[in-house]
Length: 44
Image (tube, rainbow, N blue to C red; front, side, top):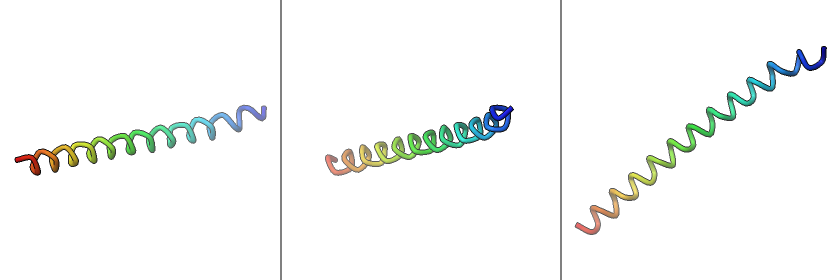
């Protein structure tokens, strides 16, 4: 019976953690892209 109370909380926590990871990866991608553009502009 205790597992039935904990399971929804655990699922919600996992979903929030995965959302946070996706946002972080998206942000890193933007940073890398802007750095590449800055290097390209400097070279030109």
